[in-house]
Amino acid sequence: MFKDLLLVGLGGGVGSMLRFLTIRLSARFISSDWTLIGTFIANIVGCFIIGILVGWLLPFMGKSQNLSLLLVTGFCGGYTTFSAFAFENVQLLQSGHTLFSILYIISSITMGLLAVWGGLKLS
Image 1: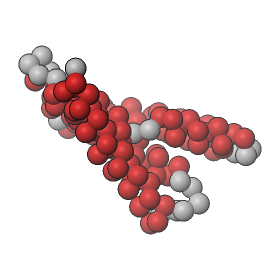
Image 2: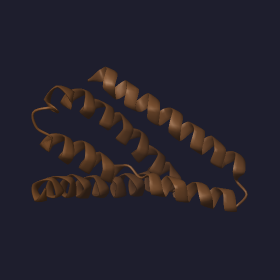
Image 3: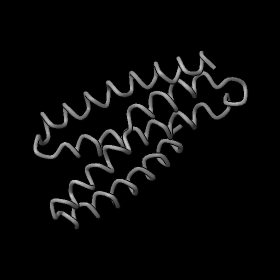
Image 4: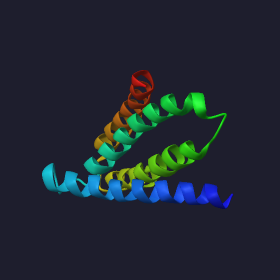
């Protein structure tokens, strides 16, 4: 159990740091007004990565879960962020940007599903 926690924690720490960099770089190079662009990028890229990883790790999952814990649960769990996505939508709704919030929700879910599917197909 302790080894599993360490694997998830290590992967999650790296994923969280990379998400922080993704959001900061997107704010710097794309738009500092809308930090949700960084969240969107991190979530879609994370969905693509999890598709690739699960497709790649599937044959090995019965033998050992170490890579899955480190990369899928840890890294991808740390890199993606549902809580920021939900909070950003609440902020959009509270500020009267209802249509934008609806579009953000629909595009995030659609693109996320397509990214996972694409990652699985690519692997």
